[in-house]
Amino acid sequence: MALAYALPPRDRYRVRVESGEFVVSASGLGGPLPEPVPSEIAQRGEAESLLRGLYAVPFDRSFYEGYMVSASDLVPVEFHSAAAPPPPRGFLQTGTFTVGLSVASAPLGGSGVAGGVGFAWRSAPPWTLGLRVAYTYAPSSFADGSTVHQVSVTALGGWSGQTRWAPFVEAGVGWLLTIVPRQSETQSDPTGWLIRGATGLQIRSLPVGLRLDLAVELQSVRVDSSRKYNAIPSLELAAAF
Image 1 (tube, rainbow, N blue to C red):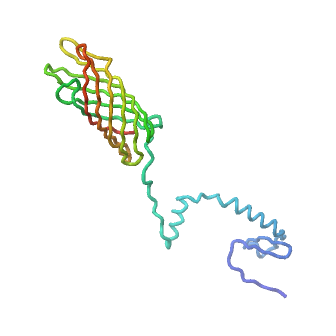
Image 2: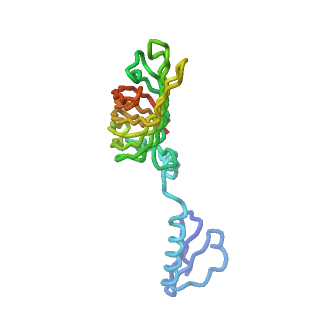
Image 3: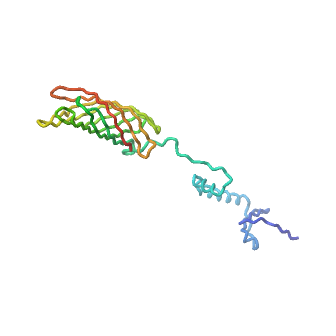
């Protein structure tokens, strides 16, 4: 007695008999069938094959987006950027390097304003250590038209937030060189010092960060054999890398 089965279309078929089981391809159904393999061995081989292929394709965002192209009946997931980016990687990849332009009141009690440029490096927040080097120029600060040049090096310490709009406070102490060129002679004081306090806001959401400093420096400069002290307010806008 012959028995015929109608099989659904498949690339291959698994056949199980009393002595075991075997797998045959659709094209091989008309020919001699392979010898059955004991079920335990066959199952182990199938499990090993499954494990070998299970992680062959990474199930990451690209896999999901490729799957969603063909699955039009599913609600897609929208991917958004992180709420706050990590602090920018700066000088030596350990902090932030800034280059800024500043405006301040004239030093030594002179009239008008002074302009300057500052370079600074600060370690990663929240607690920061750093170093600031600055140059300031005050044109025609006195009645005789004398100008004032100042160079300073300041050690910094402070605290900074870690959000996109990060407030900060810092203080520092440093060395100050003051030079006043005059027609008769050039006066200078290489033994000056300063104490600096600053607060402001740093914006990290732009390709290049921005830093706004409101600062006051107490400067000590020797003038005509006597030491003078001046409080110098300033405003600095800097680019942060």
